[in-house]
Image (cartoon, rainbow, N blue to C red):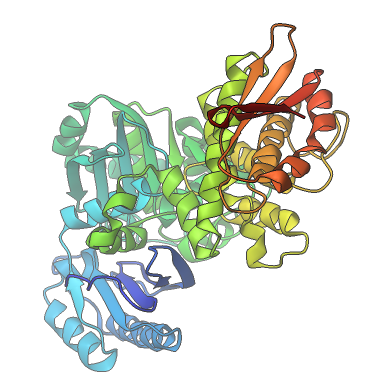
Length: 532
């Protein structure tokens, strides 16, 4: 179904992914400016594929009852959040079941849901959309891996498009049913080795296809991969919630060895494991370990995004209004989405951003700082978001801005980059921290110096648009013949308030650059030049 064009009030859309292991609900409020707010994310394990993957692919009555009951409740929850549109898809368990007509009829009658089974390649495509739209994958080829309950999807793509879609009939539940059905006991090495041979033989053709591309990195999604990475993090001494975002092959092998040596009751107690996944996690791990070994992958990055995010991305991409946003990079799109969802003054944000970048560029040109494109980009994003804290309250909105940026899960950035941007917006007003201040204590010294420098440029840019009228254009730093630093301004009107706002920044400039600052107002078209 093609979504209608966005117009009028915001719309609420519910996305449902009925998988082999779990049913997931994602309810999103989409505004006319193409920002969106997540109203709720829900996941419920239903084990729809339990007992299905034998001689006949039949969804068992108890599993069908669980799935229909959960979908009914999720439908009611989405309606309570105001959902008027539902996009519901089903993956491996339903698409392979000989009795899929029965469950689709029941979902229609009992849960008021029109569910569309999708092919394995469409599942791969949507998963790629979901992951690639939320991570900075670069221009090179990336291998995307998603291990579900009944199937494993592999995609080779870049930030622009996919080049290969593969769906294999092997997943955590399917492999468990085939090789590890005695859940309660430790898993013998011979059994695990037999499962690895099966996986390797079954993915021969797909592996040959992937090897035909020059893959530069791999990204893994799905609950299985995330949980294996979390267990590995805990084994390496990281605390709960302190994920590394990566899983090495060596760490995976150590996790697999430990899990296989334990009976189910003990496996459920392993630090970091999801107890609901303890009986099937080895079935997923054998797929990932074999794949990494055969493709000689030393590590994979780990993403929490997946098919649901792909459903949202696909929905938005079919909107005419989304075309310009779709052409942006992940980071720029994420920043735009955050700013608009908090109803920032976008005209002022864009003006401040432009002024800040002019200051950064001209300062670099005369040697005031050594920073390059990475720092320039962080300044641009921070400038766009600097007033976002007004969404909470004008008073101390710089502190609120820090909190929002620091905790908003901006996509495509690493933690240090987010922390730098958060500190830049924190110090865009009020007292500027001195060189020996502990204000940037959570950052290493190098990153702290970057944040302090960028914050200065943002403070000046904010002052140059104090009236929000765009009266100052193309400011720039220059060196005089005597070696003084001049800030030249070209006003488009009476900018007296902006000039007054600049005065407190002279001291900060001297502290930061060990130079004095001279402000020159250039009105050459009118024949006069004022030095302040």
